[in-house]
Amino acid sequence: MSKNTPKAIRGTQDIFGADAEAFAYVVETFERVRKLYRFRRVEMPVFEKTEVFSRAIGETTDVVSKEMYSFEDRGGDSLTLRPEFTAGIARAFLTNGWQQHAPLKVAAHGPLFRYERPQKGRYRQFHQIDAEIIGAAEPQADVELLAMADQLLKELGIEGVTLHLNTLGDADSRENWRAALIEYFRAVKGDLSEDSQERLEKNPLRILDSKDRRDKVFLADAPKIDDFLTDEATAFFESVTSGLDAAGVKWQRAESLVRGLDYYRHTAFEFIPDEGSAAADALGAQSTVLGGGRYDGLMESLGGPATPAVGWAAGIERLAMLVGEKGEPQPDIVVVVEDDDMIATGQSAVSAIRNAGLSAEIIGTGGKKKRFDKAVKLGSHVIIAMSDGERRLRYQTEGPVRERLVAALKDLGLN
RNA sequence: GCGAUCGUAGCUCAGUUGGUUAGAGCGCCGGUUUGUGGUACCGGAGGUCGGGGGUUCGAGACCCCUCGAUCGCCCCA
Image (cartoon, rainbow, N blue to C red):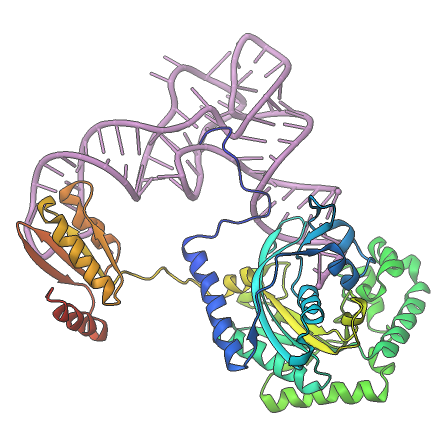
């Protein structure tokens, strides 16, 4: 490779071969399951005005200031490559009059961009599948959304992953809890880790999932959200959990599961690999497979009417790491032209095979004696060898596949 | 943003304490053998050792910088 050949941008991936098959399998399964739950497909722009994200996410954390791909276009507008789906979908809901479709169930998938340090299961351009229900205030919406997520993971064959569920209550519950946490941790501030002392000012809820031992000793006695929930918030959460039980979705309570952004209300959840599971090993530190929650406060931050909504997203790369090897499919038939005089015969045969809906590859280049070996290495089910003015067939499979191919070849007059 | 480990042919790797023309397997190309067959053998193409600078008589091996990868911390929409 030449020294001045351009290299790929840090944190981007060229997905190929078995990885690409696993990726496609995740997306195809998502498409299938999303239709079962009657979520409608949306295609969204990859970039938006920066304010779509900055107003939705809030200016509070490093997220907006340091981790978005923002740039000025030629007209002088500040634009940002989407770091998430939710804000853009919310913007579309408001600007396209999608209120008329409420409650609106939508699903999307595609690339997202975050300026972060790449590591296992984490890239600067990465891909997510996403599902949202907008304009539905009822806990049944949460249940349906979670049931879809649960079924998706099952259909992908991912095991050892559990739904961790929490409630953040309504706006008042959340604020009172937050104040109590600050008060509690401030009293022991000197004994907390340096990171958590910082978090105490910026993002106190995050102290709850600190990995530092110095912090963990204080977590057990920290104020619990349950003590701050209003009656309505408690009832809402109970409806969600009983609905999940009725739908057969297994879950476990995770009192310290929080969301960094202010617009989240009530339900918050993540599907996380069980400790010691194969899934946990495969994902390393980036453990959450699928996460989301209720974001009743988002639409107002974009200047729209109060609109309840709930959604989730999941990283396709991470899911793909958990679905196991998805080999590239073998060709149904390989046509080997060993005799150059028969190249036209081979071409018409492979054309007929493909028109009949069977996958086919034609080999007619390179050393004549090695062409058959190439076909064998492709792992084809059937090889049609053409040499000395005649055709020969070799079947490599048994059972139903073979019968189907035999019949098809007979129809085509190639047997 | 911080830390650790790593970066040699297309791929996986080996290269003693720095010393003559940088190696292997696989893959690829060609040939011989075999001849309804994923065999065996022979040969070939392809790296100047991520990039730049330095130490040295001499560096793939040592030092510095830089880019990238991997794993972790921070962050996690």
